[in-house]
Each structure stands twice: as C-alpha cells, then as structure tokens.
Image (cartoon, rainbow, N blue to C red; front, side):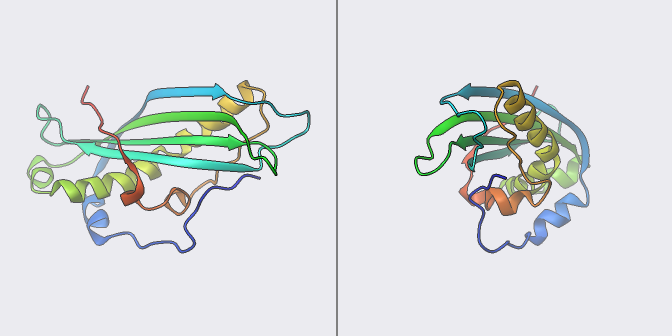
Length: 172
C-alpha cells in the first residue's frame, strides 16, 4: 500500500463552494496532458512503499461562452523505491479539463477567487476516478507494482487548494 503527504486534520469545505456547486452542471471531463517516465529500477518482488504528490489547479471563464467554467486539475505522482534510500523510480503526470455550465448571469456575478476555490474542490472530485485509473493503468503498462491511490477523500490526500501550483485551463 502506498501513502501520500496527507494533512493531519481534514479541512472544512468553504460555504461558497457549496453555493456555487448547487448551480453547476457537469458537462465533460477531458484528459488534456500526460507524461510518464521510469526513472529507476526495482528488484523482483519489491513494492513502491511511498508516493509523493504535487497538485495543480485553476479555472477560467471563456469569453465566447458566458455560462461556461473550465476548470483544471492536474496531479504529479512520484513513486519512490524501498527504504532506506527511497529513490525515485517513476513519475506520472496528468492534467484534466473539467467543464461546468451555469446560468450566465449567475456565473458572471461570481468572484474569480470563489470560482478558483470551487474549481479546486469540485474538479479534483470529478477528475479523481480518471486520475486514479490513469496512474494505475500506466504503472501496469510500465510493469511496476500496483500504485494504489485512495478511492475518495481526494483533498485530504492532496492538501488544501492554496498549496497547489497554478494551472490555467485553455478554452477549446
């Protein structure tokens, strides 16, 4: 089993995220970028005892679609080899674009910081099953031992959005 750098105490979802989420309609989830590399070797039977995460996210309102919010969620997963060395053996990186529809006047009335917060909480939740499957299938294809990511509790694992790197989705 692998672990990540999870915060010790879960944090509360801000009320603005719930308020915006009540009006959102999920329209699509697209994988927009991937990168994988094998950077080390494991001996037969060795597992990947530890995984480190780096999270990216952001949101944009395309001018040509006033009721659309495109959110980005990206995750980099670094698999570390056995202790005591914990040498990096693999790196997986993927970015997803998640599209939400709103009534245009409602969306335009929202502050950018509130939409970024909504994007962080909701895009990570909606993209998570796809991220999980991508990491697991790529590890299998690279003949690595299984890298098991949790089924849910995404934000407990990747940390609060204010610690994420900025990722700006591009309107397509």
